[in-house]
Image: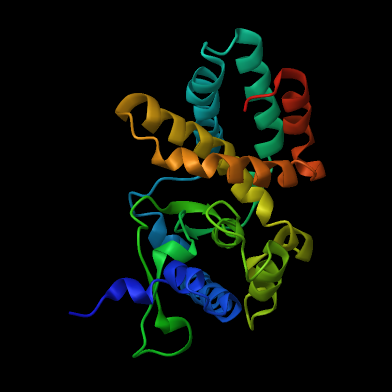
Length: 243
């Protein structure tokens, strides 16, 4: 029986395959999806809207679960309120961004090689049941994040440029600056992910995903150098450390 797992992009990269062509083809698939996205039809679908409010609520998992996990206590009122205010400042741009269908968990481990197809059609997508409508560059940033592995392929800048300069795709993005900073739209989820894995560990006793925590923190340290995340960096300096 054929092992379809051998066609998984993540497993292929882990096995030594050249990651760059896989990442580029994944972005090409995203470009096609955004080009054919019908905004009018989407209004009639029961899909979640990933705006600033929803992202902010997801990030609060860090307060609800990671602090109790690491500090062995609940977050103080000052920690919670200042954390929310910092993210409110950081996320306020999201609702002004171009919107499209957002797969949400777009990464090599959720992509499959379809060898009988060519170009963007050769990319199979798994685990998009939690998708919805959200910022157009989010999935590119998700693809390029370094939580499970070093990228070994596209940087966020490369992915954004590939989206921007695709024939006909430039009209989907308000400016080159918006595309070049695509990583910003994924950053709201990184700290929420720390809360998610802590919640799983606390409620179920499953701790295997805690192995990602050092890599998540390393990625956060890199992201917090961005001026867009200055309020979050200031909050960390005042109330941290949390690891």
